[in-house]
Image (cartoon, rainbow, N blue to C red; front, side, top):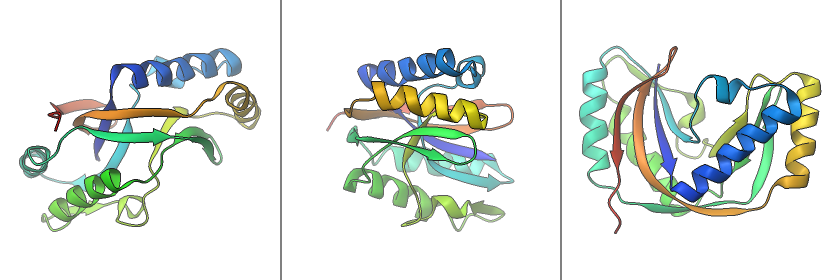
Length: 176
């Protein structure tokens, strides 16, 4: 499996990293830290036999993109074990996701997860993962007290292989 992910400006990344650390402290679950997961938003999830084709399309699409704004106004849960910071699905994110979807969907021996298709994608940033029921309650209680909406920027895109995570390519986006 391969992921295309968005990475954030330094301030936004620092805020999200602090949530990783504080959720780990509040719950005893340090999955995000122990696995060196950087703050990111998955744009699409792809099953593919030939990563070379993905790399070519990834580079082509990135060359058409620039830095974009995001707003992170909420928190949520993907039951049973994920807590996340939710993003407004603005025009920038919708177009970003659609460009990758339409560029990759017809590559032979490639399939895109049903959760990352146009109009079925929920942009979010996981801040706690593999949480037990009790840890979910602790994480939610912490976030309820500590969370404040964030406005930030997507400044970089990456293509990675999963299990184990391996970055194949990361591209800094130009400011428009």
